[in-house]
Amino acid sequence: MKFITDSEKFNYSGNKDPGSFEMWYFEALDNDDEYFFTARIFTGNPFAPAGKKSDSNKPSELSCGIRFYLYYQNRLIYDAVFDYKQEDLKINYSDNVVRMQLDKNSFYFDRQKNKYHLNINYSSQEIENKFKAEFEFAPLSDKLSFRVNDDPDNNSETFWLPVSPINKVMAKIKFYKNYKRVKSIFEGKGYIEKSFGKAPSVLMHKSSYLGKFLSDNYSFVFFVSEMKDGKKFMKILAYKNNLLMLEKEEFDYTVKKTLFSSKVKSLEIKSSDLKINLKNDINIESSEFGEKYISIIDVTYNEVNILKNVYGFFENGAR
Image (cartoon, rainbow, N blue to C red; front, side, top):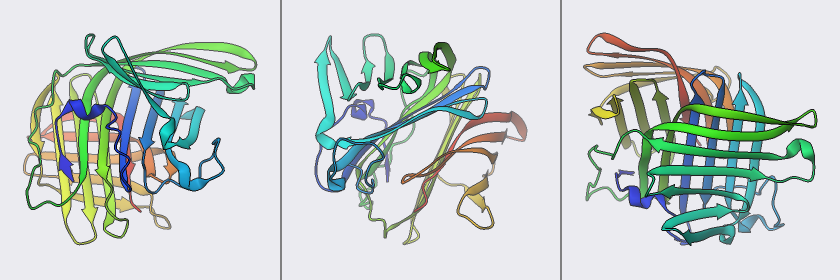
């Protein structure tokens, strides 16, 4: 695993080599902690199974897809789980914008306005399934400034890029309830990241843990990837008032799981000056990619409690 800061890698590379993949993640919580959503768009994923919905009857061709979940007050109100052929991901160039499009869904970065866009659009013949959402992510931090991982002895070909860890998010959401159109305005905080490269063999990879938490003044991102040969790739990034406050690649962590399953119940991170307690609250996704949760976090830094009961996202990518 290599940690990089090159935001130019946000765009689709077009790499179709066997085993290669690209995944984009968009996540946000509204300011009232009522609406939240998580979106995953991927292409070339080597362990995606046959799709839930697709125009193809050949599972081997299903290597591109969308996973989108929208919640209101801990209740799922819409989900889109679609798989496509890899060539269905289209790239459009207009007004100096590289727009990546999958069916009627799209995502792109508008460099001139410095904003990321995610558009989810499902035009079903069944009126209750019609859904349209336009999300706008405005970065609050100008650029990534952490240390990159470029160890020549690291043979990993997988990269982790927290594209924009702190964003103001605005959205317009339209859907139908009881055959009446409902409009909602979403205002909140969000996170964007991308992972890409050549996926390590399932036989090599043991588990991974990823957490993202945003408050009015602070943002925390942590990443842990465990390999079966004992190697670990770890990173903590903490921002205060949109500026990088600390960065760590060495820390202790303890994971507690439920008694009869692999679901993560809680996680604790400790270092000389930092303590993070995470408790998973709602399991919002169970898929081929692992488990994703809405979680609650407490953070103590230099013996001062700087975050208390802050909501965010946690992902357990164990296989």
